[in-house]
Image (cartoon, rainbow, N blue to C red; front, side, top):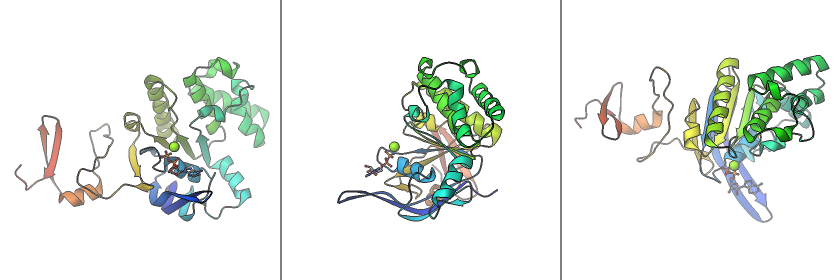
Amino acid sequence: MPPVIEAENLIKIHKQGNLEVVALQGLDFFMESGEFVSIVGKSGSGKSTLLTILAGFDRPSAGSVTVAERDLVDISQRELTGYYRHEVGFVWQDFTRNIVPYLKVRANVELPMLLAGVGGRRRKKRALALLEAVGLRNKAYSKVGTLSGGEQQRLALCIALALGPKLLLADEPTGELDTETSLEIYELLRGLSHDSGLSVLVVTHDVALAQRTDRVVRIADGRISTHGRFGQEELIAIDQRGMVQLPRDMLIESGIGDHVRVKLVEDGILIQPEERDE
Ligand code: ADP
Ligand code: MG
C-alpha cells in the first residue's frame, strides 16, 4: 500500500498586505494508510496551515504533496471536487461549520450524499449506519439544537465520513469539549481507524489526547521536529505488547546500537547504550 500522505519540503507563505508569514518552512510528512496520527505543536506552529493544504482548501507555495496518490499541487478545480467527494473528510475546529442547524440529524448526514447524487435508499441506510456507529442512532430524527456539544461533534464526524473518505482530517476536534467527552471522541476515532482501515490525522495541542493516537508528530516553526537534540522530548505510543519505537535520530545521537540497558529509576525508566556503566 502506498502512503496515504506524502508531503515533501512543503513551504507555505501567507501574505497579508505587505506582510509575509512563513507558516511552513520545508516540512516533510508521511503517513501510512490506516494510521491514526496526531500532530502537536504550539499555537502558530503551522498545524492548521498543514491541514488546510492536505484538505485541498489551500495550496502550498512550494514543495510536493500527494494524498491517496492525488497530487494536490497541480490539481484542477474539477479534480478537487472529486478529491472532496472520494478521498478526504474534514472536521472543522468549530464543528458547527460541518452542520446545517435547521436540518435534522439524519438529513445532515445525508446532505453530502445528496449533493454527490447518491440515491435516497442508499443515503438513508448509510446515514443510519454512521449514526449507529457513533451512538447517535436514537437521535436520527432530532433537531441539531437539542444535541450536546459532544453529540454535535459526533454528528460532524458522521457528516465528514458520509461519502466514505480514505483520509479523515480533524483540526482540534475536541477543542470545545470537556476532557471526558474528548477522550470518547478519540476512542471513536481510534475504533474507526482500526476497524475500517480509515486513515485519521488529528491536530491537537493537548498532549494527553495525542497520546491516544498511534503516533505523535511534533511540529515547530513550520517543520516536523525530527533532529536529535539534547533535551529533546517526544511522546511515543506504547502498543499492547509494551513495544516502544525509539526515534531514529535520538538513537543515532545517543550512540545506542543493537541493545540498550534499561533501568527503573525514581522518576521513570532510563534507556542507555549497553556498554555504559551508569
Ligand atoms: P497553528 O494551527 O499551529 O496555530 P497556523 O497554521 O494557524 O498555526 O498558523 C501558522 C502561522 O501562519 C502563524 O504565524 C499565523 O499567524 C500565520 N497564518 C495562518 N493563516 C494565515 C493567513 N490566512 N494569513 C496570514 N497569516 C496566517
Ligand atoms: Mg490551528
